[in-house]
Amino acid sequence: QVQLVESGGGLVQPGGSLRLSCAASGFTFMPDNMKWVRQAPGSQRELVASSFPSGYTDYADSVLGRFTVSRDNANKIFYLQMKDLKPEDTAVYYCGGGGFFGQGTQVTVSS
Image (cartoon, rainbow, N blue to C red; front, side, top):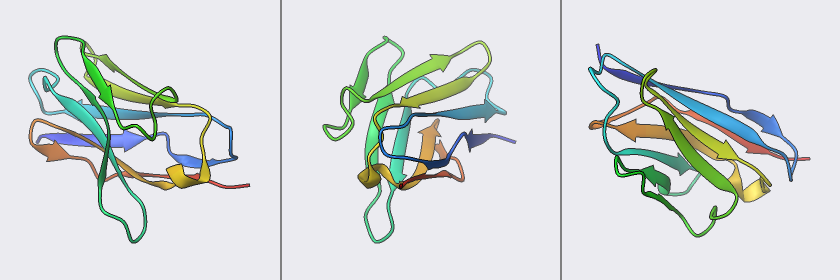
């Protein structure tokens, strides 16, 4: 059974950091193109960051310089390191790849 499972979300104060993980199971290999998207209440889903097999990464302007993606292909885990978090980063974060999305993990930035 193919699935993506996110973890690492939680409540953090503004300026804090979190690292999200996405474990890919049921795949023979980690999907080539992986992404993180987020959805805040009442808003459309937003592409946050993408990772490509060439090593190229791409970020939304709103997170550039604060978020970093990385991947452990051997263990099929995809990460999103977030720093200097802001209240507007509050959302459910989903990882996607191979045509699948996970169930999401909640990130809440609040004092």
